[in-house]
Length: 201
Image 1: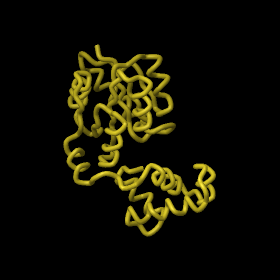
Image 2: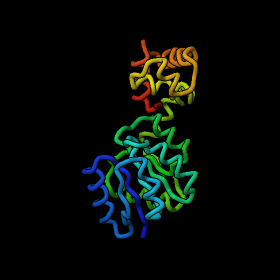
Image 3: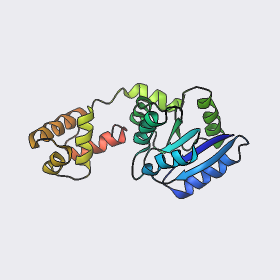
Image 4: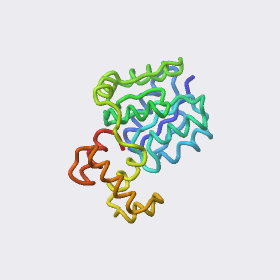
């Protein structure tokens, strides 16, 4: 029996997915959580074979959780599920060592097949997303530019961003200016939105 952990913040979606996967004769959902920061404890408590992680969750994103699990539980297979087919998300998931990246509107049988394939050592990627990621290319933003732009998108002032990220006011201004240029935006809010839409943040 393949043991699954399901991390999804929308209770109705989580319960529906658990019910559908539970119909498979060789799959068992042994744990369900609604927040990213609850995953590690659930993994320790239930020892799943595969973690199915939504990208956008409170507490921690599925991408961050997946990257942490790769270090803390290297044998655990990580499948990233998303509503948003953003090429940048796919690239970041693959860079963090995810074993699969699928959109949630795929049929349950396809998800079950993907679980079996990753346990057999394969990497499974939604083909339409893979093509889009190749066409889009890599994110032009550096890790620091992403941090600053992400904070700016939350409405923080330059001084607040500088304090939160332990940077000087001038360095924050320079990072924001570069990020605005790279995204082709007119201002920081537009740059953050563009980067988010492409899955770079």
